[in-house]
Image (cartoon, rainbow, N blue to C red; front, side):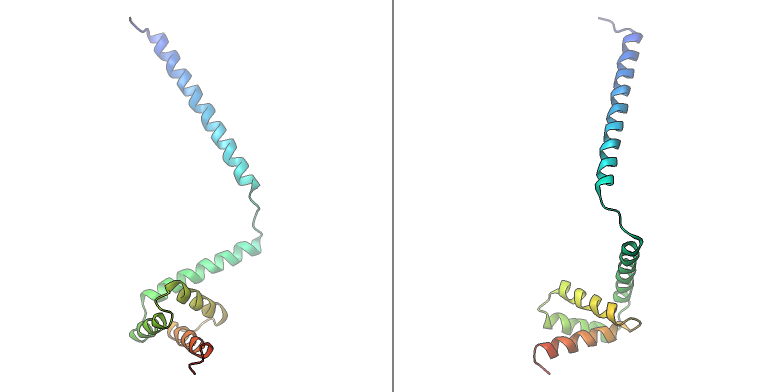
Length: 121
């Protein structure tokens, strides 16, 4: 049973047509998904951009922490029983409300606030 070149070409063109139809359907599907999502206002975009910038700054600050900052971080983690997410949240809050301060200042502030709130002071 020999297959002619015409049959092979017809088969390949059929597969190509199916692939094109599938790509179009996938494109329409994703278009509708994106269209349904609410658009962010420029203010929301700026807030998110600022948050990401603060997060990058915090990561870079953590990379170059002094020995004093590392010591304070260990003390805070001890106070928080090793809960790093809570420490990050408290530091982010402090950095958001007290800009242009060093990482050591924020660590000391968070430690002071924790001890004050727990009645240790």
